[in-house]
Amino acid sequence: MMAKPDMSILVVEDEKLLNWSLAKSLSKWGFHVLPVFTGSEAMAQMEKGGFDIILLDYQLPDVDGLQVARWIRKTRPSASIILVTAFQLSELAVDAGLIDAYFNKPLDFQQLHQALLSLPRWSQTAGGVRESQPRLS
Image (cartoon, rainbow, N blue to C red; front, side, top):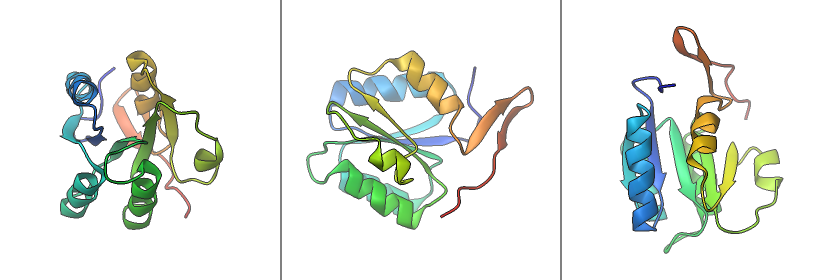
């Protein structure tokens, strides 16, 4: 299944090989992808333009991924945030609406692909992707 052609993903991952692998796979799946390596870069890119989805590493070299998620949620509440972590993460961040989903490393790319296609913000239909109900803040 391919993504909606105009959907964009900001990949925020400091591990260069994983960042490259994610960008390559996401592009192959039909997403427009911009890879960055730090939380500061992520916030700067979010200020320049919107992204539909942010694939966000939890442990970044300059700032905690949850801090970036909080900033994104305040400035772009409609964006979907998927956190990626090597640590055990409490469901609290998901339950509080801070992030939409999270994945533990090592990533299962097939599961990630399925999650991207079923995010609450949009859902797959025979005619492509349609918007679902907006998130209540």
